[in-house]
Structures are given as structure tokens and as C-alpha cells.
Image 1 (cartoon, rainbow, N blue to C red):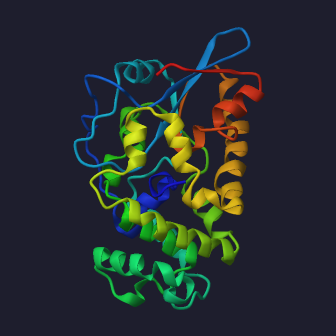
Image 2: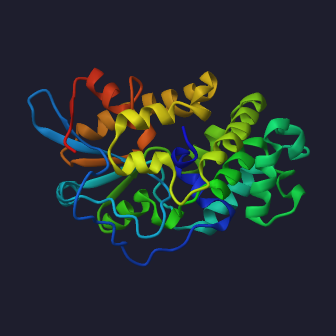
Image 3: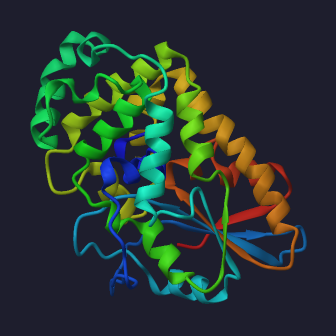
Length: 295
């Protein structure tokens, strides 16, 4: 999992959520486009769709295709990880409630000495004191530093654009803000520190305007995305189990229930959750659905 595929709440940290009064112009005239899947039942009837999102992009990034626009018109509901991305005050209050309730100690004592340079660089970019992250639990410092490291902007995220497109239709959360943060908050300290150091290590890759992962996402290159997202944070077996496989299994059960209803959902979650043997397309196929990539 890369910085860009850490769940949506990372985009809410440090009060960086910006209100969007209208849907941004995200359409581009020609492909390639990000990957889009169709979900059908045992009789071949289409029950819904899946689209992998990215939570932060540079200004003026174009990614929406005519095929996705067609799906947006046909879908009855949008299914996301976290729905209320615009309430920055509430999300920040929730983060503070969970991030500071256990003594943490100096952040430098929790960072690999080989990554001190990356930490110092992010401190400069964040324009905060060296001790700013000391009171934060390690998972919280990791997500906050991930927000500093990313080159894109959360207000340009694909998830946010899709939420705007469904402004007057039903939106269903798979986790919600508190549930998502609780996953990180419940990690053992050793895994929290692994997460923190993985974020610092990955920050080296995002010095340009757009990272390799975002480029692969924009081009719909799922093979490359799989290779890139299984490095770094998800190279740690324990983190991969908690942050990817366990969550995907829980989501697959929820999605199966949603697909049994008459309303057709568009499931839009972080793109890393749709890849490989533990990805949602594979898990839904194991539950009897036919999942076909249509873009």
C-alpha cells in the first residue's frame, strides 16, 4: 500500500479538508482510463460496478471516462469507505480524540535512524516544530506524515468527485470515519512503528508532481499497480493482513448483501483493495458473482 492508497481519513488530517461547492471537471477526452469493473449474478444480470479510487491528485488531473459517466448515470447508490469527507472539523476532532489518548514519547525514538533524514524533510514541508508529533501515537503520526508527503491534493481525490456526483442519491459507508481510524488505533505498537517507518521510506518516491502509483492508476495499469502497492507498507505481513486482507473480507460480505437488493451500487474504494488474489473482484467471484473488467 502506498501513501496514495492509505485510506481516506488520511486526507482529513491536519485540517486539510477543503469544502467543494461543485463537482470538479475531471473528464478527459481520450484514454487510457482508470480500471472499472462490472458485477453480474449467476444469470448474467448486472448487479453493480466497482471502481478503484485515489484519494489525492494534482490540480487539473483528468480521469473520468465516458464509460464511467454511463455507470454514474445507471447506479442507484454509491458505496465508499468513508462518506462524510467534507466535515473537516468533526473528522479532526475524532482524530485528536483517538490519536492522543495514550502516552507516546519522542517521535525520534520511534523512527528508524536510517529514516531520520526523511523525517527532517517532512518537518520542513509541514512547517512544524520537531516535537509536534511527540504526543501522537505512532499510527497517527504515520497518517499525518503521509498527508504531508503526498504531492497531490485531497480536494482533487477521485472519491470526493464521486461523492459530489451522488449528491442527491444514496451513499453507503463500508467503515465510516471512526471505524477506519479504529483499525489503525488498535494496531500493536510494533506494527504502528512499522507503519510509521514505511510511510517515511515511501516518502522518497513522491518528490515529483505525481507519483508512479498515480500514473499507473490513471492509465488503468492494474498489473503495475499490484506490484507497486504490494511493496512498502503492504510488504509487512501483519500490516497487509490487518489493512488489506481482513478489511477486504469484511467488505466482500457487506457488498454481497448490497448486491442482493434491487438497487445497483457503484462500489468505489481505494484502488489497492481491488487487486490480486485478496482483492474484492476475486473475493466476489468466490461468492458466485461474475466480475468483468469493462475499462
